Amino acid sequence: MTNPTEEIVGEFGYSFAIEVIDLPKSTNYDLDIIENLNHTYYTIIPKISLTSEIAKREFLIAPLILEIAKLLPVKVNVEYPLDINDQLGGALDYLLKSSQNLIIIEAKKKDIDGGFNQLAAELIALDKYEESESIEILYGAVTLGDIWKFGTLDRKRKHIAKTIQSQTIPRDTEEIFSILIGILSLKPGQSSIKR
Image 1 (cartoon, one colour):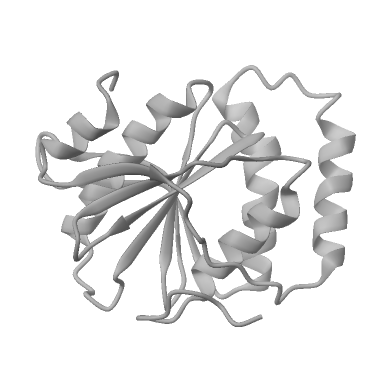
Image 2 (spheres, helix red, strand yellow; image 1 turned 90 degrees about the horizontal axis):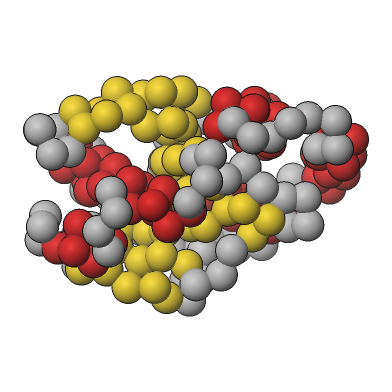
């Protein structure tokens, strides 16, 4: 998907913008989790060749998701099939679902912008697939393993937003973890988490 994001989403009747997004965050976790994750990252990153998508998924993304699954009652789906029609279909790298919310995580080897185009199409497919109207905002993240960029789909406005800022592992591990926990802890209709 090499076309600009606004053209891709426009084909499906959605708008797009790069914005400052106030993503939900939660601090309802033990800081030892972050210390252990960072210790793992600082220990393994120098020892692992991270030139493939699978290496990034197994050594950078999976440890984060495993800690989330230990902390929250979430269902982690890997390579989740989502086929809406000929234009909207494929496998979501990760779909994390709590009883309140969900998030798509799209892992890429390189090209975060191209990855965001794929994420935008996946968010549109999920919008058409997800019947629960209580979820007003769909969340997604595209990651190269060490670099993370978040996006949202406002279902009422049919608007996709991409965060202007990025986070990196290991520098921003706590912020990434806090955002993922915040999204999965949101209750329907809630737009932010009380700390």
